[in-house]
Image (tube, rainbow, N blue to C red; front, side, top):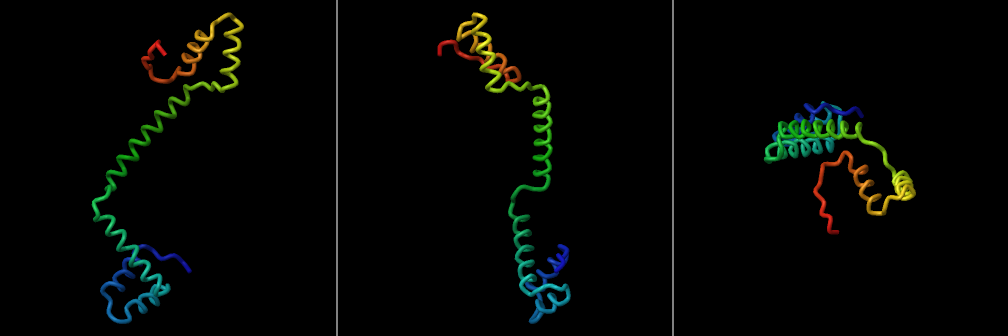
Length: 129
C-alpha cells in the first residue's frame, strides 16, 4: 500500500473526530487505506498538535541550536586540521629517546605534557603534586 501524504492524515483525523456514523469507513475507502490506519493517523495528528501547543522548543529554537552546533563543528574541524597524531607508541618512543639523551623522568614527563597539550588551552598547574 502506498504511503499517504500528511494532508490525508489530517482528513483522516477529521473523519475520526467530527465525522458522523460511517465517516471513518467512507474515508478509508476514499483514500485507499484501512480503518485502523485512519485511526492511527488521527492519533498521530493529535499528538503532533499537542506537541506543537505544549510549549516545547520552537522551530526557531531548533534552528538556533543547529547554527550553534555548526559553528562548534567548524571549530572542532579547524582544531583537528591543526592537530598532530601522537599515539601511545610514539609517546613511549619519545620518552625512551629523551631518557637515552640524559633527561630525567620529570623532565621527560614535562616535555610530553608540552607536546601532548600543544593544542589544548593553557592551564595553570601546581608544581607540588
